[in-house]
Image (cartoon, rainbow, N blue to C red; front, side, top):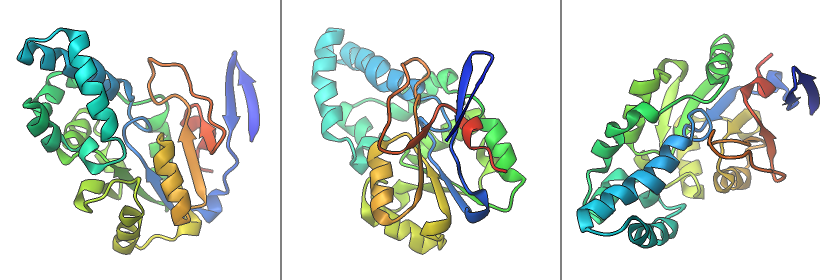
Length: 231
């Protein structure tokens, strides 16, 4: 890793051998898109609407919802808008659309994707997001043309945290583990990818622009995509 300080901004370049990378797997929420939208939606907006619907106080609603959310982490249901619409009796997709103005792209993502587009790498968006959420975010950000394909874990029936997903995904796409780079903000997902045998794994230090950067020691991690620009 090479660290450069420029105008009081520290950029630590992760040393990647781009000549040996043929496939790039990119997560969406917290990697390309600011996780602030999702955190605000689930931790603030949904408790408010749930409280209103059920005639509860906000804190009372949070005390009901947060343990429920926690119990589903890592499971496909956690990412499934249909599941939460039924469970909470709320139109989750409609509510996401209601505050879709908060959806935003993280810094330097467009530069990175544009640079990748100039290479011969296969670039895949690989997300746990429900198709309705995925469609909304692609509509708002216009990122879809940058990808050779968009992979949604719901199509396989398993979240990215599970080995079954990775096996099914590789069988479908035929990419090579040794020449694949994966960037994701979820340590649980990165661990699953590591177990599956993907060597080049990078995490995101600040997936939510409204929260402080995380200290990550388990994987190489970047502040933004300038640190791994293809060469």
